[in-house]
Structures are given as C-alpha cells and as structure tokens.
Length: 296
Image (tube, rainbow, N blue to C red; front, side):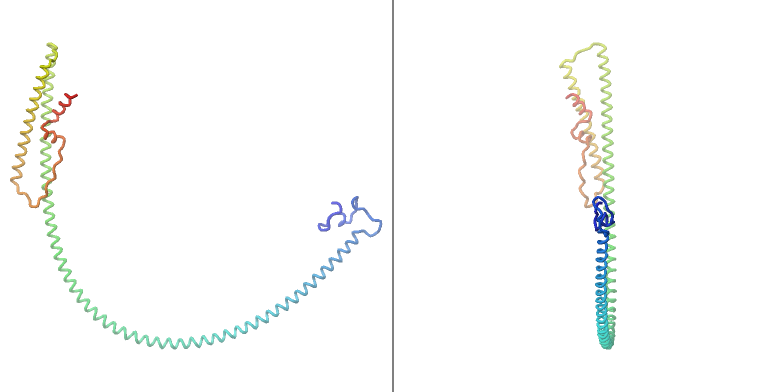
C-alpha cells in the first residue's frame, strides 16, 4: 500500500511502520505520534462541540414543546367552552322544535281524521254505484256472449257442412281419376300385347321366307309395308277415340243424376300426364316409338 491513505486508515503512516518508501527519522519522536495526538485533540474538540450543540437543541425543543402544550391546552379549553354553549343552544332549539312539531302533529291528525271520514263516505257511495254498473255490464256481456256463441255454433255447422261437401267432391274426383288411369293402363297393356303378337308373327314369317329364298327389298315392297302400318295405326286411333267418347257419355249421365251443391267453387283444370297427352294427340306410346325408330 505504500504510505497509505488517512480515510481508509491503511498504509505506513497509519500503522506507524517503516520501509523503503517511508524511512525513519533520527529524532526519537515519530510522525505517527505527533499526528495521532493532533487527531485525538481534533476529535475531542469536535465531540465537545457536538455535545454542546445537542444540549442547546434539546433545551430549545423542550421550551418549544412546553409552549405548544400550553397553547393546545388553552385552545382545547376555549373549544370546550364554545361546544358547551353550542350544545345548550341546540338543546333549547330542539325542545322548542319538538313542542311545535307535537302541536302540528295533533292538528294534522285531526284534519286527517276528518278527511278520512269524508273520503270513506264518498268511497262507500262510489262503491255502491260501481257495483250497480258492474252488475248491469255483466248482464249485457252475458247476453252478448250467448249471442256470439250461438252465431259461432251456426258458423261451425255451416263450415263443417261445406268441408264435408268438399271432401266428398274430392273423393269423387280421385275415384274418377283412378278409373281413368286404370282404363288407360289397360288400353296400353292391350296395345303392347298386340304389338308383341304382331312382331312375333313377323319374325316367324321372316324366318320362313329366309329359309326358302333370300329376297332383296325393292321400293314397291317398302311402300306396301308403310301403307299397311298406316292402316293399322288408323284402326287403333279410331278404337281409342270410340272408348274416350263412351267414357265421356257415362260421366255426363252420372253427373246429370246427382244434384250439385250451391256456391260450388270452379274445379281446377286437371294436369295432363304423358298418357293423357298422347291420347289427346290421337297416338299411343307404341306408335310414337315406331315413328322414332323409323326416323333413326
């Protein structure tokens, strides 16, 4: 550390040791002894000054505290006196207010009792009048309710009758549609059976002719075949037209025998199916297929 430092108290000077950097003096007294005494005197003087300053401050603080306590005591005594005066004044005011309030309450009770008696009399009179009015109103309402109930029952009966009539009409229409559909299906089945029979006959004839001699088709033979097919188609159309006319006549006879109900709604037009459309055109499904095959 060398000579050292006074603040940290380290080194040759503080320890009082000697070396190359700090050599001994010839005198008996060392620097350390002199400086140590100086430091001690300085520290003692500082402590004395501090002690005196503390004593003065403490004396001043005690004086100030005593003065403050005396002032507080005086202020508290004055505040207590003022509070006592205020409390006495408030107590007197409260007593006066209580007396006035009691007097007012008595007067109000009397006025309320009189007002209640008058109101009770009026309420009784009004209640009697209202009861009479309610009884009359109830009687009128009961009469109205009876009349409305009767009207509703009549309307219900009418609606039920109309609904039944509509249901019957719908059921009849459905039955007619079913009958028509069945008739159309039967006719189509007949036509298919006839076509199959014809086709089988033609196949048999072709086989027979093929066995005998293979003959090439000429224009004359083709014309004959087309003419025969046209004749067969015309015959089928005439048969279908006759069956449709017979059905119409039977339906007209049935409707003429029955009485139609009043205020009957107009029946919606029936949607034509593929079968009914083909009938209207005057061609069966088999004829259409044949024509398509020819075009191909």
